[in-house]
Image 1 (cartoon, rainbow, N blue to C red):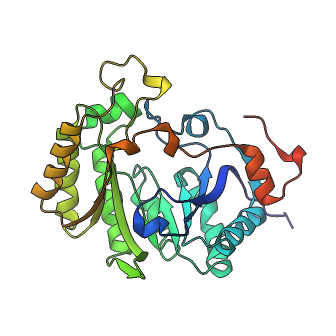
Image 2 (spheres, rainbow, N blue to C red; image 1 turned 45 degrees about the vertical axis):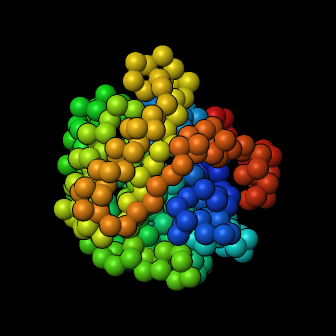
Length: 286
């Protein structure tokens, strides 16, 4: 009989992270697992070294689940899978095992650019959906992220996530089940934000929305006529007003001083090796 293929993933970081939304990070941190690669190619990506350059270590399924258990033992409020979309078919099996191995919620932290068919495969395996909803303007989606039909795809994805998790459930202030939609406000793109908020309101006006002001220009967009500058306070204020004007009632905002490289996680692979107790020879080429 043919042996089943060994399930492996390329992972860039596994660690407690304290800079997510308050009901995700809490006071002990979210157990983040950063997967290498991404199905978008955002010009402004703050995690460029893992999303585009593929920095990471090959980690098998057993080690990944061991890492989840270790994060839970360190106090993680949840297991937070960051950019997992490209691995959905493998993760079905892994999450079936993980749901028996850890007791904390599983968070699906994605770009929002994913198919309903794939999301349906995750039903019963994901407790909290934490998608981005980057664009209502498809021309910006294509220019900045090389994404076709982003708005239509993201709308359908968020609707499916809400179908799977129709109620937001909290315990001691921490989300146990539900959906939080993130929108990163970009320079000169308040109308884009307005369109996102209006669409979310059509899906569910009670949906939690995180209005993110943490944009800063990375080296990849230095000199870009729009993306090469920071978000202005007036732009962010108008985006917040657009949130309320859309009829949304639940959400999070940020201080603009969070728009700094200091909040970008470190992708030091030696720390990942140490965390998973991997031999030094296990490192892959970046």
